[in-house]
Length: 539
Image (cartoon, rainbow, N blue to C red; front, top):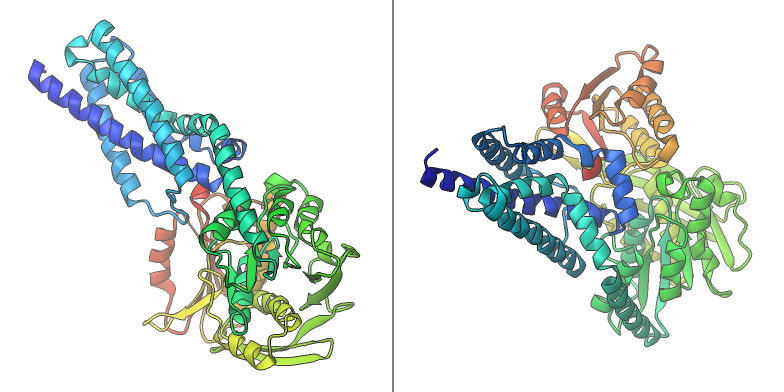
């Protein structure tokens, strides 16, 4: 290469490598954010997902190493760096994520420190190559290219280091925000605060409760998935108003003590426990730990408070509650419960049912589908009745509750195909209910598209195999997406497939392939269930 042309090509390689690095660090930050900014969880995810040794990272490190080996022509390394960087930039620009990065102030701080670290490494490489490298005629930019490729391979390390450096800063900032939120809540002594937790169902129950109570009170709820301590703090500081009468707080947890921490802040007078099941077992390790953590809400209630718990789950039914009044409800395990649902009927308009218990018999209709939604509505109605919401307002609110996105939403396509969207997440209890809802549709073929369930620890294979068995018994066509749970689901399907007359099963590598296959086999009158859409972690 001529001197000028070499400089142009090396400059292009350096520029594209830096752009690719910036984009890749953004993705690494996104995954750190999804792991609650906790490095230990982040590295556990890296280990389980294989992201730290992905093809892209291996290619980047090979390019970087080739630039350090004198007998490999510089031209090869530069061309490889340019092509790979273009590929990475193009790939990330087209990638759509279920939970995209939210540039909160904390995310901006981490990203800024990570960029400073990367710039320091790039600057050092520039200076070193300019003075020592045998390709010094490239004026240091070849060293920048090599260093940028190495940083792409280790972008997750850069992000983790930036996060670690900022830990003392974040603690100071969080404590200031926490104390401010605490003062705001203390200034509202008449505010009714209701906590909602559970292995699953808590977000839907929160929405339903908010909708019903809003007919009678000025009600605020934690938005989206703001169910961590700092998410609640942010809600209090940014959304809660002095005139609000009720505050519905969703409480999430991935380890013991998480819910207790939220309760110390908001001091709820009422609490709902929707489920205790095999969710997040990779961090809780046992169902007993899940139970103890979810009941931190009940244990934190005052003596004159109210706990509303779902006895359909054995690890709720067997948990004694004697510190506060406890109302138990169920749809299936109806012995020794205070409230239940009867006469549940599904049709094209939704669900008709009645809530019965303690002098109450309330006939209701909702657009929502599924036994799980009926269960969630029972909990919300119990709290509404206790707070004095008139029955006519409850009936009206339940009738007009909008479906929560990706949680058993039902819609109809122009082609006459019914879509049941249960793609938010999946768990053993909810997935079974979703398949049961699909099986109740009889106008055409019943088709399920699923990648299976995650975050189940050592139970993951067995539970996905059970899901496969249930699918083969209940529906007509199964499309299993991806490889993460494929073997387990297919083993379950094959174990009963011979007994399921006319049943079809297909395996595909991506949702895009599933859509192509669906377009070939689905016809007007068919119903399609999207059961879980694996997070970016496992796509």
